[in-house]
Image (cartoon, rainbow, N blue to C red):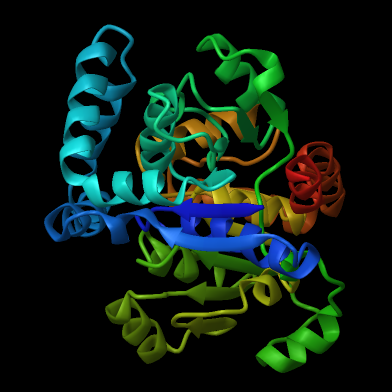
Length: 363
């Protein structure tokens, strides 16, 4: 069976989910003919540049424009116009991807981004391909761009996500609450004492992890300053080199500074609380690690919707200011039973066997 696993490199979460599926199936079902593809590699150069660089620019420097665009495309009143316009733009710029779908016509398409899902579903509706289409919705809420009538199965993160799809008219038998795919490294056993020694920190200290994605967005410096006297703070600056240099120069007590990392699971394993952005893949990894979470610097639209979804399960807080962040973190530090209660809430929604269950659906 030929299986195409496809994503789009607008934000890292879609790619991470696709890679997790690809790597799991490659290891556990070697008889499958697997292809992993970035959909944007089959589009024209200008469209790809706008999709990737434009997204980065908007979420870093023009979040109000991004929020406006999200609201317009989410509005039921404006949806027919915005959806038609988006379909037209995609059709014009994605001819290479459309030709690829028609030529390859894989037995199964697993998509972790709404762009290839939509194009594949349109082709299937017109009998141009016969592929079974599984769409993995990589957020905890649902934007209408994810929904296409010819999709065979939607794999979602939670019952909240399932309910949102059903409100949009998707039949219940087309929805499976399996959880979002994640790298298995997040589920292995961790020895906190050994990891702390490896990272050069004190395993006995109450530890807070600050990590907001590849851009290092948000008030990380201010949060580190207000917490470092009371907690051990791990700050992941990622691509924010200016922040990294400032924090290194300040040399704050109890603060460990990182640039780009490939061991997020280890930093989570030694921490009692994480302060982060509410991206879908990040949330999934945090839930697997059973970490109480504070959300900051949410991208208006899908990430604020993710916060709302998690709040229904009593998971995650979004303080109004840095002082409230400090108060919340110290309350957890001084009341460990609250951390235990939060972990219990997390266990009720986490899906540690998402990949295994997805593989069983494929077979």
